[in-house]
Image 1 (cartoon, helix red, strand yellow):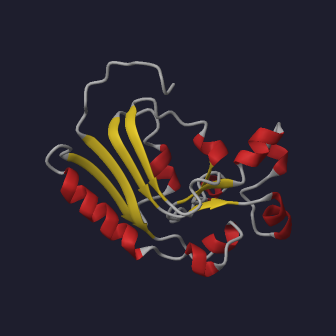
Image 2 (tube, helix red, strand yellow):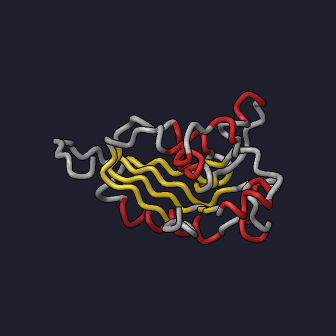
Length: 171
């Protein structure tokens, strides 16, 4: 897909996520110390400054902050056309040992994985805001977007995705 040429007209559209509120249980959910999954105040400044820089060339901006920047909202971008999607959030990578030691990672259900690759893709991902109280969504839109979930989304109509997150190069 990286080398496939396509004729795409610039849309002038940008989506940005930053300054997200993760919820109290988020750190435990991914096996991180609570301090590591706390609010990232500079990510709000990051998306605000990026918005100002891009405003002239990309006037159609969707900015998701606070409790609006949910996993569910990010998944809704799948299949849409954007020039840029920028994510400023927590990233994580969990080793096999991390997974064995943590009891709170209910987003990792080994019954769901058909092979080792899919299982390993469930050990890394990104955190989004959590404001959903719909019980039927909590398992799949729980604020934890795993690499496996991401692989099922379509961003072929996006020119550039930037990721500003810790541990982004590990997973």
